[in-house]
Amino acid sequence: MLIKNPKIEISATSPKQYPTSGLPEIVLVGKSNVGKSSFINTMINRKSLARTSSQPGKTRQINFYNMDDKFYFVDLPGYGFSKMSKVEQEKVNHFIDEYLHVRKNISLIILLIDIRHEPGANDRMMYDYIIRSGLPFMVICSKADKIAVTKVEGSVKAIQADLNPIGDFTFMPFSAERKIYSEDVWEILKEYINE
Image (cartoon, rainbow, N blue to C red; front, side, top):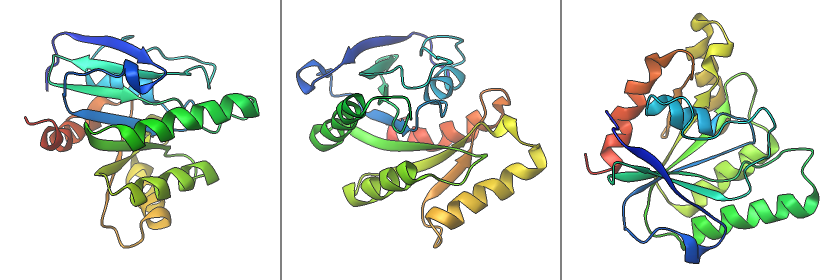
């Protein structure tokens, strides 16, 4: 999909700041530094619309990225960064929890998990939370460029076998470097953004 004029619309810290346009929202959740910003930039073929940082745990607000007035990518704060204070982590958790509870425009949640590692405790908690929410979701196994191409499929299957042994949810690889996966992800996203 070609996105011609993506822009960050607002960085919100409370529901009263959320956009009111009613557009579908594709929500990104995951650990700090798992590659949420890189996912957005790669999907829309931009280098720096979504701010990436070598310092995980920097995002403290909910970023709404408007995609040609068709839908939003919504980047939630990353969780589980060890150097974040307990107070900061609780604030981040509150942002995530509040958004997922009150927002009616959520079309799809994407949980990003680093393909190189088995899911951590925070990933498992988020996965269970999403399951209980009843909202549509998929899992993106990010940083696929960090392992050999021949190992990607097996690594995705291992993460799925761990979290979703009956295999009834979608798990896909993704790489900001190897853009071969982007079109496959777009095919799924189109189902959720009225394309």
